[in-house]
Amino acid sequence: MANKYTDTSLFDKAMIFAVKAHANTERRGKGFPYIVHCMEAVEIVATMTNDPEMLAAAALHDTVEDTPTTVEDIRREFGDRVADLVDAESEKRVEGSSPEDTWHARKETAMRHLANAPLEVKIVAMGDKLSNLRGIARDFSKEGNHAWEKFHCKDPHEHAWRWRGLLKAFSGLENTTAYVEFSKLVNYVFSRVSSGFSFDELPGDIIMVEGVLDAEGAQKIVANMAHRHVYTLNFAQVPSVKYSAIRTLLNARKSGLVFFIVEATRDVAQRFETTGAANFISIMRSPRRVDMSDYKESGDGFTAISYFKNDGDSMMKLYYDFMPTSVVEREKRIARSAFIMGIPTPMSGDIVHDGRRNGITFERVLNKRSFARIMSEEPERLEELAITFSAMTKKLHETPCDTAIFPNVAELYHKFVDDCDLLEVADKVKVHAFINAIPAAETCVHGDLHMGNVITNGKENLFIDMSDFGWGNPWFDIGMLYIITKLSEDHMVEKYYHVDRKAMDAFWAVFVREYFGATTPEQVAEVEEKASAFAALKMVYFNTIGTNHPLAKQYIDKYLLS
Image 1 (spheres, helix red, strand yellow):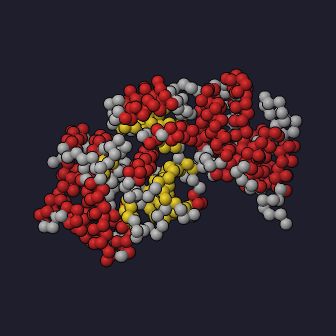
Image 2 (image 1 turned 90 degrees about the vertical axis):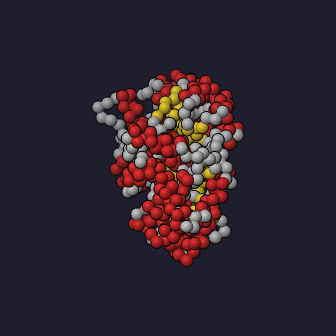
Image 3 (image 1 turned 60 degrees about the vertical axis):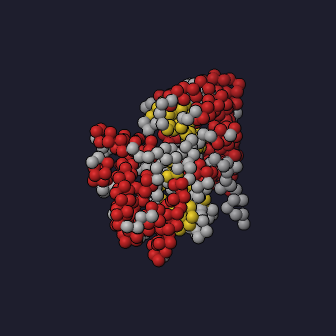
């Protein structure tokens, strides 16, 4: 008996159905039978799967949209799954409006649905879209911009917008040969169609760049950044970058401008990587779609949920919806750079998304536990852990940081103050003055320092959660640790750190003794007074990311504004 993948009866039936449905129909403007396109779509899908229902859906993908066939006809003949796959690939027309008037809206809706669709839907769609794009590339090579005259939309810039958007929507298929071909054809056709360059500055020091980037365009971007601190350049709509533009950006980086590139296409990222420019300019690719069925939830935190991949080799951290994408990008950039610099931390992988949340993949440290978890499960080891934690922290704070790659924590806090809703204008002036008075340092600061962000497998102790890593005065870290150990509510301590208030107090006491050498009540009180001021400053940061601390207003008033 044939197994599921060698039994061709369903696929054979689908091909015969498609041949009859498209009988005597020509592929628009091509001069060959319509069914040839369906056959090509099947061939493309077959490079990604041998699932007979998906192959059948590829054969039938245009029957509902372009013939009298209905979704219910498909459902009756081929079952629910095939019908749902065909329906997902069938563009919905707008009654009472012309195809020309609704073109942009229809394509935008289709792209949005595809971006959030399961992988099997994307695979069937790739068969259709890559077949179409092959035809466009052939026509464009012969006719140039006249190739668009046969479409409802004649504007090549609109087509460039659509096909670049489709490339992004096909996240999750990056490792397939079909995606690689699709990416190359998009770049081949639309880098020539839409070579116009523009950029737009958005809130949060983000610059959206569009079009082919050459030296002149790069010079304009650099001039815009000349007197600011840290910028994020979003390259999602940049199909290609000239060598001369990379050289311009490298020179700007060497002159001291700090900027990072995010959401780069595969081709653009590869140009930075193969030239070596990525060693000096941080560049991250567009997020890759992950299949959540490959992962199992392993724990939750204040800003993200962790998952283990079923293969045991990696894990993933997905941030909650309320966390800005910039936080994810910053953690990835910093985790990679810190690892290269020698900071003990796990290796980081891709930036990913599940259709709703953004996150990062990391190597999975087998048999690891956080120091907080060990404190909960083996309370007798609390002092040992606190001593180790103190030694790691002191070594981190003595390590010179690469100021060309990592952010200045003091500068970041100036920005947090500007964005803080808890502060009036006059109050912001006072807090800026407080930050300016902090002694400067160019050593490493973790930024989210606590016992939950150090893990161990019994052999190695590693820092994790590096999104706030930078350089500056160590007291920025001490303030965060003080919040966790001394100021957090009891239920939060138990939920996120698995210990009680008594254990937190004991951990802080050992840390103060080991890190500062404070042994008398007066010395401890002096440390805690200073830590309280930096804790208040950290609460300003909490406010800017959409969360808050119960003591925020009280501590800010007392330690920063008095």
